[in-house]
Length: 258
Image (cartoon, rainbow, N blue to C red):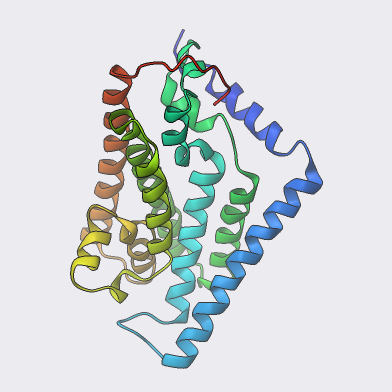
């Protein structure tokens, strides 16, 4: 039997747990939507005040937020443990997954959902439909871009979290999580010098939001290929670092549900 056979049941269980209290579920979704609206208001007011900046205006900034919210909703909502891998390693939370006849990484990723971040995904799609001037072509590019962005964000969080296998601590995962989420809220062209190089390489925030947003407005096949390549590299890096670390993992004799 395939080690992935039990994943659909795990996903169903995680979703049932997330919506077990409908009032709390929708309250948390509402809180996240309110937070996203605040970011929208910030960028609209900013561009009304200063005008276009390096090719970015309010419409493109809202498109950036739509893509980022959608991908963050997918990764942090559906694959909620992706941001907690470092902590799970430090606390011995991987032990329970290793005792099951499933692939540890996929099981960990889908074991829990975050109701708050599911609101992000819902908001991102609605924001695009409301402000992104959707037509068939733009919608297709938006969906593929959001999917690539999700893959890149997921791979990056798994990779940085898995560094805990080698460092014995989970700080790298937490630092990577906060850094990429913060920088992904801003157009990459706002940065210069070393920071701009950073957001296109080691901390690829540009490929999480700015590049997909640019592709929706002005599609470029070369840039699209680069976006897909960045997502593939991040996913492979996450899988490779986790797999390499797993080989040297020493159980802390702590049994818990990840």
